[in-house]
Length: 252
Length: 369
Image (cartoon, rainbow over all chains, first blue to last red):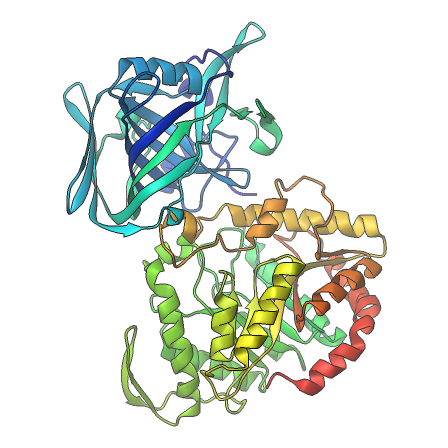
């Protein structure tokens, strides 16, 4: 049987958001811009970032993204995410370690509706002729600085975005419990580029990784313009039980 | 219709000192029995770094052991990775020729390019380039075998005039194949006059369409080698038991475990945005049908698990699709005890093979050339 994650979920849940429930409206996010980089990570420490419900992928890798959403129900906002790719049974998923947005209003909605562990920071996303640059700063200190170098056009069908898993807290039957919700957006691509991934800096402690996320072998970088969404929640999982036994459907 | 066996050599954790040896020794015992029972080919993959799923990184060594312990069964590279970071083409030609000599001309030479980032990234190979390097290798290797001396200036390797030695025992060279994972690779096989070695599971309708197009293309092929190999192999699972329910239950448990292990790997398509890998690879359609290793499920269409009557029925459908040979995976991570695997092989040979005796005789008379 493949290795299971070793995360101390109880400790991790102390920084997870309290969701208002599972019934949320869909947010349509038109004309989004998403810079996405992937790097393999050192295996042994990364196993401590994966809940026991999941397997680290072989090899494990991190998915880093900075996105701009020019229109949403709370106005324009940016969102950066650091996720660790895992296997939920047989499904590849990105397990959210931490996120930042530039909008207080968006942050509170993202926490309550979709269980984002998200803070507020200063985000930038710049597309130049020879590179696309994404940065995140918190309290004046840069905590993520990454680039896609030498962009070239590809088809949107060549790009794979994985669905996300968010550790969150929720009150059910009068009792607060920790669980994982799945976020599975749709994408309609207007354009897509790929290039060489270049990670200039990543302060993993600022993303809830406590020094356990060490990026190594670069895999890919993409920059896409697309319509996407934050969907209704469909699945929730027990973080401590193998996902094949601990999943439940939330909505049709 | 002919039948072969196919090895990934899956090794479950924990990996104690005996774990890998046990898998290899069990496989060799199965190969010896398969040879006695009339299976006509044994194939072994080349995979690297695929934890638990496949510990078969040096198939030429395993296949040499198979050849030394058997009399008739052909030994198949299923496949050699034709990517320069993995294998130099001269070394591929040399090793394959030695295996053909040692086996007395029983080598089937399968080629391919890897479908996982786990492997491609491990060797720092560029996924964009693998199809092109495969094409260059399959054009050059038969010339290394057929020409006394060979020289070449190419994109992925170059060499001055040298005699690549030894030459294969089979003349002009062993039958060549390509692993068909991505859509369209069967057309590449047809255009080059080489056999289609199916390593993913498809529906009957899809397989029939693929075979039809392959047969059409190969009639006007420009062969890379000294002859055309126009055969179509496909892969399947095998668990044969007198009782339908038991056969299905044990067989499906193996299949689901196998697919669960495959799903843990990073597929090239997931890891890299490239047109070079349009599909997920490694039995993706089967993986869709298996959700957990413990789940009990009905056998999907065309899968050879169950009782002999059911297997005959399903294999007849593959035959009707135009498939020449079905290669079976017999176990996954030792999920089925060895004695049961051997009994499954024996029962298949006794009850199922005779139903295909006529077509086997026809296929043997036609050969692969």
